[in-house]
Length: 235
Image (cartoon, rainbow, N blue to C red):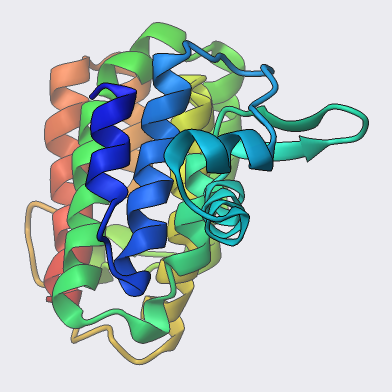
């Protein structure tokens, strides 16, 4: 959108929506000027003149951009473009205590998709040392885990955190950290139902055996069975 069109869109906007429009217009303006991470953005007065709004409105819109991590203040430089920490922003609103059942279910379904989907990355990057570490984690699991399907939250987190780490993908690891409060809430908040009687359940030990001797396809199927058993107890 051209600058003149941006200004026309802002004209007549009511007070409640003006800051929303200016926030979006600022992002578009920065894109038009081809500013990159580390570049200094124009001063408040220049932005106010360019968009035809007050400095107060500009200041509020800039504050929003700081909150979501698109800009930050640098000493002696002013405000500069930054690469947003998406997971940090998400983490501020990802509170399991205020999530409805459907949203909570969708977050766990997202976990299922990710952990099944990262099989290829794990097989490409796993080392003998990783296998040994996973076996050490499994050795501390609850007894008879494949029979009763009871598992310790600490063991579950330790095992799956190691899988995320093996991928070498920092975004995946950051997302898994976001899920930790959800795990804790589910396991200690009384949401777990009776034990599943699924005969397809695959234990942590079974997953390690496949990582050592199997294939990505076998691991994907085993991980689905492993996680779907847990989901059955929730939903």
